[in-house]
Each structure stands twice: as structure tokens, then as C-alpha cells.
Length: 155
Image (cartoon, rainbow, N blue to C red; front, side):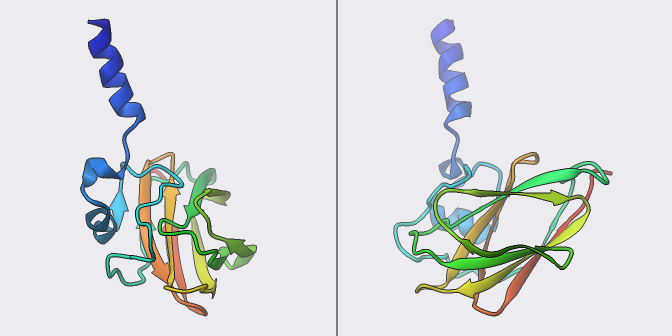
């Protein structure tokens, strides 16, 4: 009985994108509940042919409170750079994406903008995770362009 309980607990602790399919399927679906922050899905600059997109993030936290956002490169790390603004205020003017998720505190509600600063080759691909709702969003951005995440409070 104890062995079964440990096995079940271990499966929850080791859950990753593979629970939702192959890497290209997970990225093509654009949203994942199983991806672990900092997880690398590809060994090269593959992005499953996704297009840049804005997202609405619901239930991110209490109205007037804070939420945490994690951002990283879900492909081969090639040191692409992005800038992040919250409600038009620069928070990170130059964030180098890697497989180490960078944590950013954001107000709820807010508009978070991720702008492409420097593409080191193959496109700027990144993942954004809101750990309190366990949602990861996969996206791409080109230099000089941006994506917006409208972060909404719990109802």
C-alpha cells in the first residue's frame, strides 16, 4: 500500500509537458498545465510553426493583488533578448532568455507586454508561466514586435 502511495505521489511531482503529448503538440496547443518552469522542449530552434499571439490570463490572482510570472526560452538556449513592460512601465529593458525561468511580480489586473529586443538566430521563442494557476503559454516574438498578456483577477 505504501509503495502505491509513493508511486502516485512521485507521478504528481515529476509531471511535465510529456503528460500532454509530444513537445511539438504541446507548443502547437499554445497552453499547457503540465509544463515545468524552465523546461526545454526542443534541442534546436523549433517552434511548431506557431505565430505570435496575445493572451488573456484569467484568475491570475486577487483584484488589486500580485501574481507571479515566470519566463524562459523553451527551445535551445541561444540567448535571445526581450523587454518587459507592465501597464506601459518598463520592468526589464533587457532580459536574456535562458532555461532558467526569470520571475517577475505583476499587479492584477494589468497588461504585460513582452517585446523582442534581439534575435540571436532562429527566432525569439519563449514560454510564460503563471504558477498560481499552473498555466504556461508558448509564444514567439520578432525584434521590434510585442505580445500582450492581459492579466485578469479572480471573479
